[in-house]
Image (cartoon, rainbow, N blue to C red; front, side, top):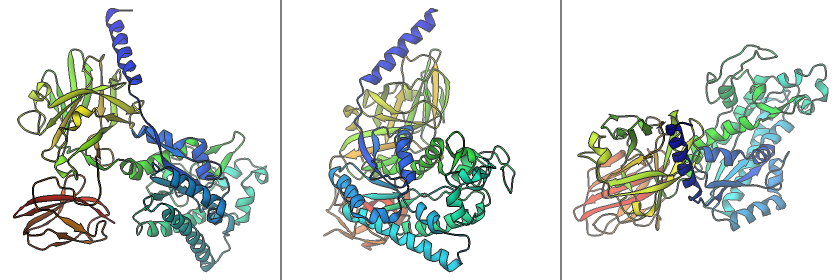
Length: 545
């Protein structure tokens, strides 16, 4: 073994050893409830696997055979046994934030027939929806702070899967279900699913604590139809070409995405990879940001980049070493929009986009913090690499680095937290000094779904007054709100009101003395209201439902 390779292995061993010194506390954040889809997601450990991929390796799901039952319908979850189990889990584990609910599919498949009139179909869908809504209302009554995420379903594939075992079609476990529905075509089944999903989506749009990522054509999109469809209409299409959310209405989910039992495949339940794709989309659109703590900020993008030990600067996000040159990722977060002034914990989430050579992110990383900017301004400059930070420390890395598209979570040590304040923007520089040759690149801020995230935990966060600057006391009511909010600031005249989203962008501004601002035109979410008065300023977090 040559000296260079020996040194690389030695440094890699030291770096990997650091992982063992970083202890992660896991908590059950998701309660998995429902039918066979919930059951299989539990068997496959889908939620745990996907959350780790997104850096949330400290978040876990919990389920059992009462909560997730193969063949269950909505009526089952209106019964005493299952409701008692749901209540017991929610009331005895305050860490649970989300009920991942998969229910309703068996109701529709078990009762609908192609000979139904439009009125009969509408009546069936409405009856299932009302029962589903009752289940959701029960959950929200048990824990008003809980969030319910309805899982939804992907297109089934009855005809191709069953015809694939001809002449033994009638022995397929799902033949009776297909026959009971009157042998519907792909388009007929997909239309029913889309209509039911649209009803649920319209409902969740009015419910701030209920969500649904509607994408029944996702399997078509991620798997593609590599081989010609075995039945009409035939044909094929490559992965990532089927349009989302509904894909191709006259095609099923590809047979390759369905659960494989060896001699045949399932007609309705997804393979482990299929469920991973589904939960991955749900995490991108819901779980990733929802599982953050008190407040999260996305990086600025325009002031992010890479600086090297030789003064090389570029706008990409790179970390590692190449020969004697070391590369560090520099991130800027607009912490002036923080809703509290004392940070008790913080972490940075980064998505791997590429890798050259040995992965430098296999253990702890060095993180430097600067309130304001490392160099003369917030832009990435050659002098930033050696600029004096406010603090520097080794930070533990969690999550996944095994492939592109996976996320790491860097938990910031306590000595860095005091320098994260609402008085200034905050810059971080991440590096892996002394690591063997290898450069990892991360996704930038162009796509908010994949942008670097600063996750913040405050000492005591609430919707009460949270003073972060000198000025008069202020109350904002109602909070949460569905639209208008009113400021109560005694003995102070209002000069300007700014409403700032979690990207740090001003989305609404008023320059008058009115004490009322209407947020109706803004998307539901969390905002920071910055009020300038003749006696000082105040900021407060406001939740718009």
